Length: 98
Image (cartoon, rainbow, N blue to C red; front, side, top):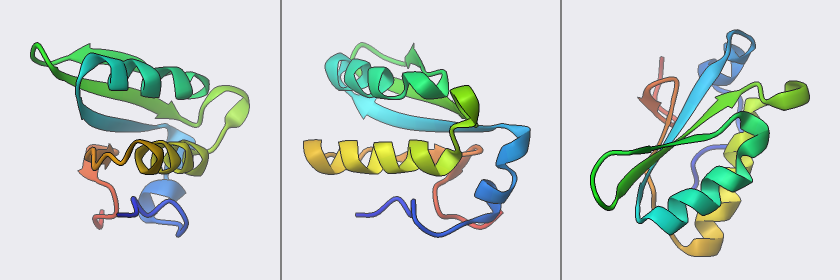
């Protein structure tokens, strides 16, 4: 399942103001691994329950790294781990219209 990293969306267009990306995960170690991958995007972890975590990232990232870079990293990571973790961009499910 693609998270739509390739096409430009209204969310990508608004990136210059700063966009938050949130990924819901079950399990601490998956959350830690993704958070480490997203360090260039100022990632942080929020524990919602004993096993539910949300990884937050901010775009643009360090040195102006674009939102599309974060989304591609997330997509590759999800594919590698065979996870279908929900992704929100700007508070909306990724790919939904603004």
